[in-house]
Length: 308
Image 1 (cartoon, rainbow, N blue to C red):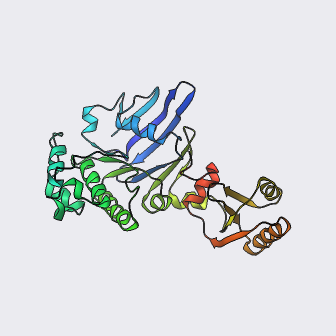
Image 2 (tube, rainbow, N blue to C red):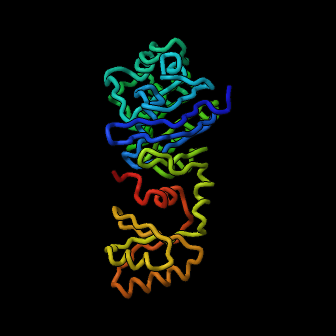
Image 3 (cartoon, rainbow, N blue to C red):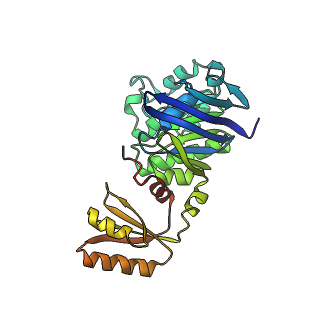
């Protein structure tokens, strides 16, 4: 098999004047975790739905397993597993019965007991869907996506709404799938999740890929040693004053967080305190930390992931 299980070239999807996907290209290595990040409306869901065969592109190529395909058909779907943002399951079926129902759709499938063990639900096999916890339900959804033993899984925000422990359990499952040679295409609203799991990240905005790379390289690209972050109720005049300095900063309006990028912590704090005193600016919760993937996202888009 080729090194790249999936290649996308110049993918486009327009809805009238709206360029939902505007010339997107990327490659996904076999056996890797590939993450597509972007604000709501960036075009990532449309891109994924085209690759899954749920939408037809206006232009562009999709190369799957080394072969260009005009559209994703039944042959390709045999090798694809999909978990959507919301999956409606039948509440009065058991876990085993639900897996068996999905198994019957495919010509090739895994043993149900094997899947139950992989998703840590072997002790819940005879439990009704309505009685599962949120984390157990999400693990089942991943199990349904892999029941046909796919080469590539598309998981759309698989840990949204889960508590930290359930989220970590899901991460363990995804890493185990990667060890088994599966390729995972992930979308997520959790930056720490993308940073922890991903081999490659594409950041998308306004229908285009604006930056891509492995998480460490993306973070390193900020070329700053430290970040100073504080809660600041800043008005437009204060932000203009900050722009007139040499400070490299981003202001998150939604959360009122000022993030300053610096190689000189002491002088930057000194300047920030002087500006706050001169402008009666109240500073709370000041922290000094190292850059992370969310800082890369903010530096590229100027907004938080959850903003529309």
